[in-house]
Amino acid sequence: MTTLRIGVIGAGIVGLSVARRLQQANVEVTVIDKELTVAAHQSSHNSNVVHSGVYYPPGSLKAKLCRRGGGLLRAYCAERRLPYEEIGKVIVAVRDDELPRLFDLAKQAKANGIPGSQVIDASELRDREPHVRGRSALLIPGTAVVDFRVIAEQLAADVVQTGGEVILGHPVKEIDVRAAVVHIATDAHERVFDHLVVCAGLQSSLLARMVGAASDPEIIPFRGEYYEIATEHTDLIRGLVYPVPDPRYPFLGVHFTRGLGGHVHVGPNAVLALSQEGYRWSDVRLRDVWRTARYPGTRKMARQNWQMGAREICGSVSKSIFLRRARAYVPDLTRTDLVRSGAGVRAQALHRDGSLADDFVIDHRPRVTLVRNAPSPAATASLAIADHIIGEMADNDESFARRVR
Ligand SMILES: Cc1cc2nc3c(=O)[nH]c(=O)nc-3n(C[C@H](O)[C@H](O)[C@H](O)COP(=O)(O)OP(=O)(O)OC[C@H]3O[C@@H](n4cnc5c(N)ncnc54)[C@H](O)[C@@H]3O)c2cc1C
Image 1 (cartoon, rainbow, N blue to C red):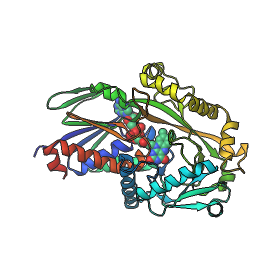
Image 2: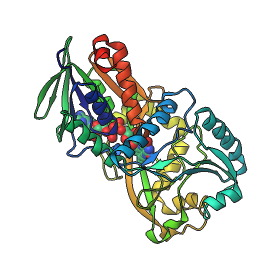
Image 3: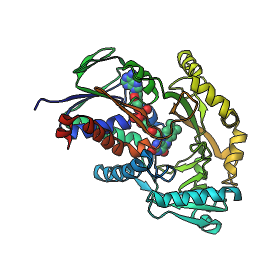
Image 4: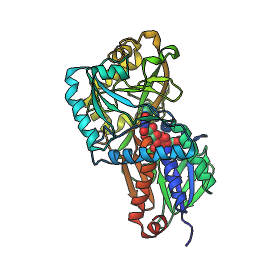
């Protein structure tokens, strides 16, 4: 049997999980990333939470792959002796009108098979999180924290140790899909593969255009900024404290996240970034701004959601507003407790009609597989996403199926 050559664009946690899985199937794998380190973007600028899967509609890819991926990740961390701390999460209702949504989430947690989830009352919440105020909460004891950058580094090491190649610091600039092979060119290399898997995160739509795919959905960058609680007051939070999500904007609201090592992050918010990889307000790239502004979906989304957008910008520029929102959960928090921390940029897939693509989106085309939408919880789900992609590739190609099954 001739060796199959597969290229993976993107050394984030999704691309590296795919590469490692392919390598196990005895395929010659080359991973290419434009940055000098692995996991340079979303996979290292995130909350590092191994999500339980409570938020996702039963039956969705997110629900299935998050549950399965969380289990695979836990086993992988144990096998590789990487930190994995189960610190538990509470989703807190601070107002009575949030209670029906909290109870709906509790039902969804059961439907998604999340072990140990239960609704607790205000006094049980106080026992668990003495500084957090709330009417009631949904407790998910198995939610864990990890370091996704370290996990990605280990995945890359696995790929290399088993004979794969990881090329860093070279952007893919051209892709030429032919009948029997696919040619790619970086600034320094030309390579020929039998198949290409594109896991390019914030640049997914750019790469999709290179292979001639439709520009729907388009990736719009949303920056999520964090504060950190000053070291002397991190005891205000013991685990993970999240709000009851607004179903229209499930990723918004003040989140308190105790990470490995005991630091506590507060955030992230979500503001439109002015560059595809814009970690600060001052990171502006006119080409990206123009592309975002010109896309019909952006204008429709802006018209439908301008109030929420304005609210998030206020929270970004005003510490007082951010503090007021955080104090709804932790009244003892003071202005000096909040210290500005880093930011991440979400790759948010947006359809032309202005609706957000919620679930994971993976397109299979002749010779190319495109991961078009892998937002949170894709880091949690990455190992399961890899199995899913390879399963679908095998369904589409009998000779590939013989190698991987
Ligand atoms: C603020 C924030 C908080 C989050 N919190 C969590 C969380 O707690 N738990 C969770 O499970 N998920 C979380 N997520 C989501 C998670 O981080 C992402 O879903 C995941 O990291 C996506 O991985 P990826 O490999 O698809 O993308 P990325 O990590 O962005 O990797 C894409 C890679 O492609 C490379 N690339 C792009 N274009 C090219 C090119 N032309 N040539 C070569 N290389 C290219 C980039 O350099 C990059 O390394 C969060 C995300 C954000 C932004």
